[in-house]
Length: 201
Ligand code: HEM
Image 1 (tube, helix red, strand yellow):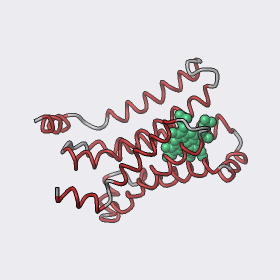
Image 2 (cartoon, rainbow, N blue to C red):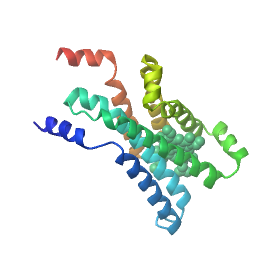
Image 3 (cartoon, rainbow, N blue to C red):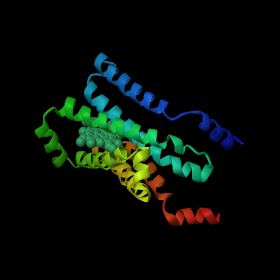
């Protein structure tokens, strides 16, 4: 069966190349910004590229559990690398915004307080910090059951990331709403009544 084949293949394919690909993509996009390949506003374009990749990877991390529940495809071993890569892009997104776009600490603080979409982005980022810091074997061992509880912070973090995107766009472009709908659907399938119905089916 195709599911068994995929699961057998994942046993052979390690997770570490995900980190290399993430750093390579970020570096390549930075280079594109330097060489003018990102258009007339490279800083803004880079900021957006990194933000979008952070959100995509956060969503990819959310897909893994329902994918196993509903199809049997087990990609759990890649979840940490995907999550840490999401954090890496969120950090790069924040760094480009703060150091290359805004470029003054007083204004960075002011923008975080004044603009609700920036406040929400910052809240999402802050929630990701303890997750990134404890994404290692020693923390998993030391924290026991609390580790699982703490890592449920992923859910509000991704939701805030989706709201941050919807809030910042002007007009009604479809893309941010599609992201938010996907996030809400992925969070909804984690609720108990839904899982119970599936188990009965
Ligand atoms: C988990 C954390 C975050 C995620 C997933 C995220 C995601 C995104 C996404 C998807 C966009 C829109 C990209 C596009 O238009 O294609 C964006 C834009 C933006 N984000 Fe974030 N973001 C996060 C954290 C932050 C933080 C911490 C800040 C600043 C404190 C921030 C500031 C901004 C700004 C200013 C823009 C608008 C850029 C522009 O078009 O001028 N974000 N973000």
